[in-house]
Length: 84
Image: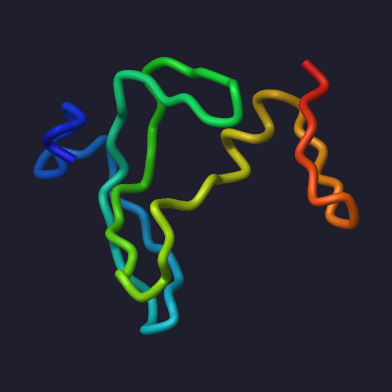
């Protein structure tokens, strides 16, 4: 997180999240900018939690990001569309 300019030692707040191993408390920090699926937001708060290597996942996209763009997920078509 330091490489991204985030200070996990002094987070905005801490959040309790469910994991397969139980509930963990993790920092919420603000990244200078975040871009995903062609959409960009500045000063975006994220949950700074390391995922196990076995998940083969770089990260999880939260509903807070998707809601900003009026996102519609079409499961059958495997598509994500933005209304904005």
